[in-house]
Image (tube, rainbow, N blue to C red; front, side, top):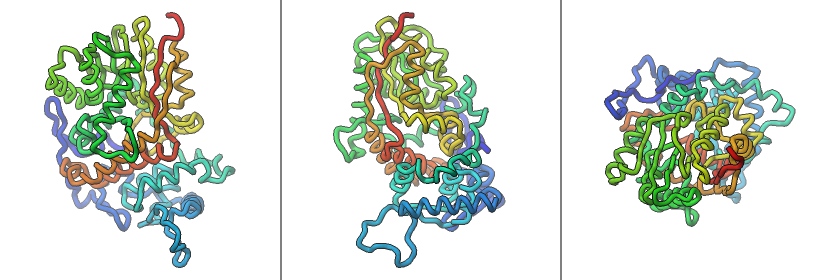
Length: 445
């Protein structure tokens, strides 16, 4: 089942912001799952609080396949006497409750794998390391003949998560309106929630602000944003790109569906004295009006949903004045992996990004061309996202107590740690990439 919305701490709503109110689960609602687990509020996290009902055949198959894969990748601690003391220790997955772990995977596949971590049934001394090894071998973890049984372990995406105009608002609300204070615990002072571009590795948190500005400036340069450029931004975030563009004396219209982001972005624009150059609209991209010299959209396409990619690219094309340019930043995955993911309800879509789907380069090319746009430049830099996510994850875990003080319980904190590590692993393994693309008109109107 889907988590309730919002599934996170209760909120006392006041004009312009949502406030997290810490909630202590009552004795009847608390269920302890796994040897290392904290109490789980069964009302708030029903599918985490209790493993699915035992299905012996599927559980046995999951145990056989998953245990074999973990041992083959040296991710499980070796039996006594099996370890080579001279060999460097690989990352380890430590099972606190093996029966619940395998039962969840047997019942719900990778959703169960994630829920088992949320429940505290397994841990790791190097969570991104374990996940990176799994992601790098994603295509050979299950023997080829058994891959045909994939449909037995996966569920279809819920119809309620479709990005209709109303659905898109709800999906955005469930992630981006959690709390501005939550995001501020791990983002740099620019509050930029997308991949940075670093001058060198390993990256340091102290360099993240400049690295985010470097990324933004590259996009603005791609779109040739300068004095009096009419710029449309689809996906405001917390306003840093709009601020950078306005500082170039551009005239910015920026669209968001997140009321939390819009309120803080407006405050930041006013504080910078740029309110006369930035118009922040609480508006769906499908309702964009006017023609612009440039359109910029940063990691927005992933939230659109495959069903609405044609509408998204038509909006980009229709928003361009003659000679205009579109600069996109997009996360991508392989096309075959995208097709599988598009048909599957995943742990990420259930708990983190409802309605989202990462496109492939082929999907971007096809949909942009169908809308009358052509790709002029395409630059991938996935390792920079891995470093960005590492810095966010380290910051989040270091400030775990601050997150708890905002009212986010232990299950949420483990969920968020897994989400950041899971994403980092995708980029470190090459399963995911991030790209900056320049699109221009490809066909006459």
